[in-house]
Image (tube, rainbow, N blue to C red; front, side, top):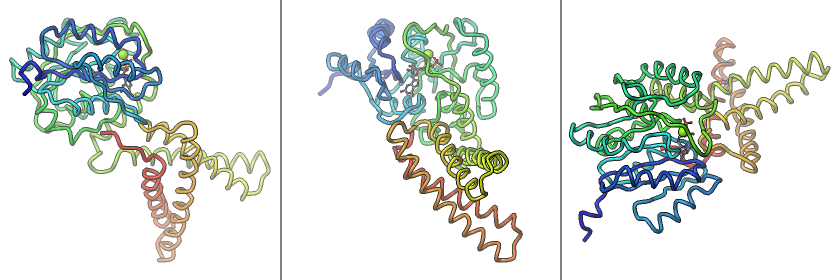
Length: 369
Ligand SMILES: Nc1nc2c(ncn2[C@@H]2O[C@H](COP(=O)(O)OP(=O)(O)O)[C@@H](O)[C@H]2O)c(=O)[nH]1
Ligand SMILES: [Mg+2]
């Protein structure tokens, strides 16, 4: 029988992508911060090319407090945090960045506070008295404040820092909400708050955001797009899948690409209409595939050979979709309706077909949480 010494009270979840130089300092600082508490750390690594997972696994062989969940063909900070929590059995879970930018010394106070005050969540805030942004650039601080203001549309709480990626949650609270989480992008705390119908009992504790010492930030321009998708999922995700919205937006851009190509070829290259239309179709399909791969399916992005195979299946699926589109439109037009209605019906049927088929055959890896 295990003794109470083996029973873990706190799992610290650390999502990592290319954090090799930070792994050992991270474990050492957790050891210092959590001392005699019964804790473990679960790294969730998305198959980092720098070998972060292998390094952690080697440490885990010697230290039972260290665990690793390695995900293959997947990306995403929020879904990594969710799956880390799901891999733990502890009554309390904390989520913290693996680059030492969050102040791990706060963890013991968080644990004490969540228990003593019987809270659902305790989060670290850079905006309450005593907290700070460290040496963040002014422009990034401004974007973060704007994103915080936008989050009010979906948030059911007066959080000063809903964009924080540093928090502790009670397992029972997480389990009640986990089926409603979007798991999109970077903002897991916001996702949890926005997924809760009843108000959560929470408290924010101040901390100073530190400067990254090693490795690189993965936050790029596409983070804004993922944030927009998360907000949209929280607002309308129960009516229509947000990936379908993204797929349709990309399709809209594809129409513009198509029209521009036809115009260019007819007016400046003197080709026949059939050649212009065929070329434009190929170019628009390829650009739609590339955009969907980057935006709609960013978490399962295809690369190298998989990109080529994906392009072939996408093109085939969309060609069948185009036939369906024309068939339905022609049939409806023959029923004495207006051409607008007939044409629109064709487009809708084609788009739904393309979305459904490519989501199964082109981007067919497991879906994020
Ligand atoms: N598992 C996983 N972790 C990620 C991913 N992207 C970022 N991270 C980790 O999430 C934490 C915060 O990311 P970071 O790039 O430092 O964001 P920033 O602090 O906002 O610049 C770090 O520990 C990263 O290694 C991802 O796609 N998957
Ligand atoms: Mg960071």
